[in-house]
Amino acid sequence: MNGIEELGPESGPERGPRRGPDLSHAWRALRHRNFRLYVLGQGLSLIGTWMTRLATAWLVYRLTHSAFLLGVVSFSGQIVTFVCGPFAGVLVERMDRRRLLVATQVAAALQSLALAALTLSGRITFWEIVALSLAQGAVNAFDMPARQSFLVQMVESRGDLGNAIAINSSMVNVARLLGPALAGALIGAVGEGMCFLVDGLSYFAVIASLLMMRIRPLETRRAATGMLEGIREGWSYVTTFRPVRAILLTIVLISLMGQPFMVLMPVFAAQVLHGGAHTLALLTGAAGAGALVSALSLVMRRSVAGLMRMLQIAVALVGAALILFGLSRELWLSLALMPVAGFGLVQVMAVSNTIIQSVVPEDKRARAMSYFTMAFFGMAPFGSLLAGTLADWIGAPHTVMVTGAACLVGALWLAYHLPRIEALILPIYREMGLLPALEADPTAPRGARR
Image 1 (cartoon, one colour):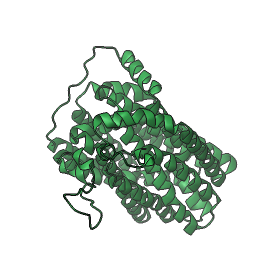
Image 2 (cartoon, helix red, strand yellow):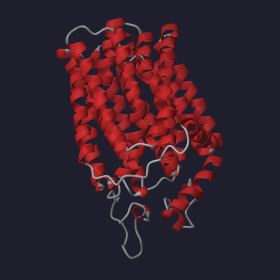
Image 3 (cartoon, one colour):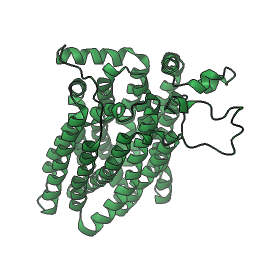
Image 4 (cartoon, helix red, strand yellow):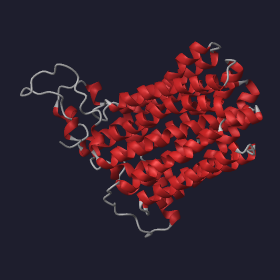
């Protein structure tokens, strides 16, 4: 049974009533061998990635005791992704994506191992962290659009694509739970350098999984047009097609105002909640728990129906959680609010990813995903710098309250545009056969068709 068929009705007269929920569809993307290999390799590597994220934040704060410099490091690590994004999207469409991903994983491993060597030797400085963050940003500029657009080669059934994205988000957030917990223990025992070493070694699991895949190559775009023409064509598409434009603007808002609160977590752990690296790990892990629940809820979905409405709700959840988090001075309350913020952030990222990849034609996929990368990861440095600057000016609690209020305004804006967006994307879903259960039932409630 292919992925589209699995989106059909759960029961029929010939099958009898269900005795309980059928969750056999939840992991359907794992029937693809290449995707299973990817999940195994990437799952190990992501634990190292989250260890490095927490260790880097704690190392910078330990060296500088500055919220502003925390923002500077995050800015330097992501600004290159923003600048290189349009060029990367055009190049990815003209290259073998598996070979490109192997190259980016090797480069990322070298970056983490260099960071480990400097830290373990006791010679690391703030500016060396900035330089290595810039290098990682350059790698991510090519890695992210290549990784996202490579999904269609690992999961050949378009009907399984959304499930693969949801499983990938689940994997990210399992690592988000395990990585910070391991990092907190390692930092307390032997320091930050061991976290960077584990991360550097973990990239070899991804490299091995990529080399073991049996991939049917896509026809890559040749340089029939110049780089600038390719960029112009991609920009014209994402800015004139209302659904993609609205989603990208929403991601920009979340990246500027919603996501950067994570940069300030060391400040909340140390100054607001009067803790240490263990408190930071608890806060990060709590956000990861909510993010994991969010990803699993998407795994259980049978179709893309209702995703735009969920996007609006998720933006509102992020805004409300941040406002309340800024008001909290108790660890238990902050830990209760972090899962809500984590849930909303993952919904925004995964839902946006699924919708864009479902409606964008193949010849524009890598370029569309490069703008997705720019919006989500490339705009984050500006948000991190803004958060760090505001935190030095008005304090970390007031900063997250201001950014949370901006997210609530964004949710209202998205609600206003929602009917026109849905009117454009539903015909595309129907044409691709992604809504067979709804289309087969003319008596379905109108709200279920959203």
